[in-house]
Length: 178
Image (cartoon, rainbow, N blue to C red; front, top):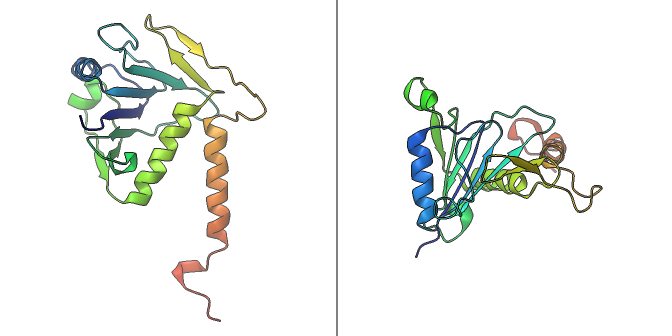
């Protein structure tokens, strides 16, 4: 009865045990959104198996390597869920044959920014492709090509705005006297 959701952003998903766990979570009613740029061995939307799973791939200007893992885990507000960033895709070799790092993000402003990145990716109607139950991908079509700018352009706009704000702040945290 507690709020539950999983959102994971990575480059590849092929680990059998993780896929089986995601199928079980879907069957238990957990909504799962996977943003997987490269290959994905999980099949979304399969009746009785993964009807609560959506897989999208965002292909655009940048070859992204960010990995963000989000678990709502009963939190009342989505940003109060558990956020992790790391180096590992959910692949057997990454999880069992390499040294990888995944760390929790505890500061709320940082969790808020990660939430915004995930929501931007999930809402993309320009660069996103939806995986079908048979493994094929269908590209999303923007309803207004002039208004739908895509994930990468939107993230660049935010970065520019944050940079402009930072450029107007005094250096080294010193405050202007006045």
